[in-house]
Length: 79
Image (cartoon, rainbow, N blue to C red; front, top):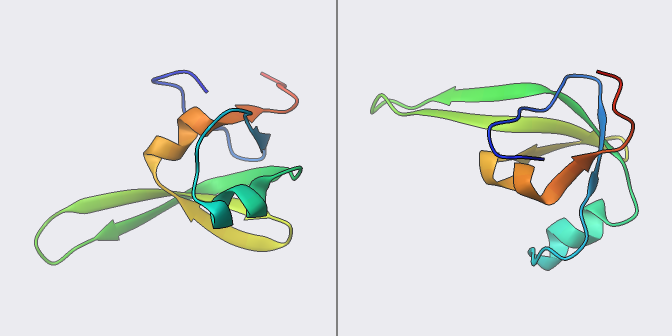
């Protein structure tokens, strides 16, 4: 995805080629599609707000931070 773009709920995403990722992340996403289902927001006691992205991948919920957006692309853009 391009900088500044946000995933759309219900859209399918796949891992782009060429990114260096942790082995467990690469294995879980490789040759699979993930559906974006929204955000998970954590408000810490110290006032810090953390926004994670939530994907449904192979029947399992996967959390990712905003930096992961550069590693994925829309499979079938319907917008």
